[in-house]
Amino acid sequence: MGDGILAILALLPIIVVAVFLVGLKWPASKAMPLSYIVAVLLALFVWDVAFPQVAAASVHGLIVAVTLLFIIFGAILLLNTLQESGGLHTIRRGFTDISPDRRIQVIIIAWLFGSFIEGSAGFGTPAAVVVPLMVGLGFPAMAAVVAGMVIQSTPVSFGAVGTPMIVGVGTGVEPLTQITDVSGFVFDVAAKVATLHVVAGLLIPLFLVGILTKFFGKNKSFSEGLKVWKFALFAALAMTIPYIIVAYLLGPEFPALLGGFIGLAIVIPAAQKGFLTPKEEDTWDFEKKDRWDPTWTGRVELKNSEIYAGKISMWRAWAPYVLIAAFLLISRLTVVGDWLKSVEIVIPNIFGTNISSSWEILFSPGFIFIVVAVITYFIHGMKPSDFGRAWKASGKTIIAASTALVFTVPMVQVFINTAGGAAGYPEMPIALAEGVANLAGFMYPIFATFIGGIGAFVAGSNTVSNMMFSYFQFGVGERIGADPSWIVALQAVGGAAGNMICVHNVVAASAVVGLVGKEGHVIRKTLLPFFYYSLLAGSIGYSIIWTAEKGIFNIGSIIALVIWTIAIYIIATNNKRLNAIGGNKKSA
Image (cartoon, rainbow, N blue to C red):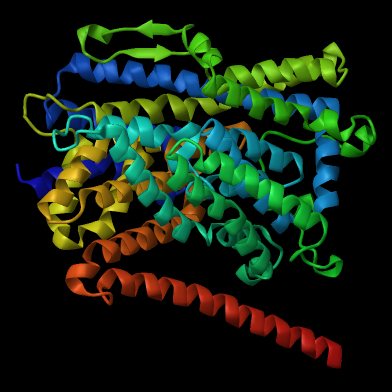
């Protein structure tokens, strides 16, 4: 069978997701079973994979789904605990004191705090932390989920203290005999990845506020988000400048973690002093809840916060999130992590195959969430009945989320475990990537990011995408005469951007706030920033790779210049229009 036909067949499970989940807006609980069935049929009858291997991959997927549900449950429990204790009311008041403007709040919480949590823990944890926090502050559930997905880009390559680079890229290129020093290669690639992220990530906070006002504002206008463009760019630079410095000096472990932390330390005091923030009369907020679109809200409902006024002090309200950050760091950076990892449930060689499954239950962020929820019970002086309601509500929410994940993750595992079939074809992800590479030729650097993005979209992880494709991307670089390290860097950047549209990340983030069945609505809103990010990074990569041979004015630099020109034009014309409106008001 030709590479083109094989690539099209490998694409079918993804097409099913695109058509039914994104296009027709089916809930994931209905679309993902179809995708799973398609993947199984292809594995059995086209790739000719033995039934025990398909079954083992499915079982492994179910086990991974349980580990995800455990994390989701912990995040929901902490949210409900803070709601019952009154801590959310205090936190909301604290953010209002920084700025009552929702645009400023989403940048600080999603972009900066989310980047810090990504650097600490990775693997979808930021969504489990910042999404419910935003809902607790009064954001519509869907707005919170979309914001949580959009920031799953710039910090992701260096999430979980560099896991996508150290484990993902490092493991992916390990078999290559051309690389004698894997850690040195990863360090070099990390610097290139940070360079690409800094350029593409500069506009992510602007995308955040633009999407917020366009889809969830009264006037459905991007321009209302663009009003805070100065603050958005300031917050972007406050995170990305230390981020790239750390990447070049210290390597892949700390760019996102320190970038987010330093960004918070710079931006919060600046916002408190009103630096580049809107004036009181220009404050932007959502409409009253009774006017929200029904698709925006989930099963997690907030109680009337006024009854909690003055009940919990600011430091006690924030203590759970401080503990989460501290515990995540301790568990990832000290010998405590090794001890936590030692408690492991292992199922080796499922059905006699080489597929094994394990669960480091104490190392899971879900365990940390639950521990912090219990600690919160004591430091907030809660009643047992209130804490019991938090557990009961969390259990109901997690049951609703389980249906989608028990099909999503097994589909992914079947898709990536199709090597070794009697047909002799490469596994589906590699077959898909080879088809794109053969079609693209020397233009491939522009498409390398999209391959990484597709890998993350399917696998649900930048780390797994890098493991799957780094070896392949290195080989393509050699084949087209490009620097392979830059092609691998483009893979890593695309894999990070793919988290914005990753199905089971969206399912997980939606489940945390009870927004079950509306995953397609979320992905439709994150497709544009994903496309922007992948295209801009790929174009810049193309320009860097081919400038010496094709000159500085090549197709890559032209595309990048067009994207930036459009962005500058939109900001400038919006600012000019707003100034004209302001002048007319004064003259009136």
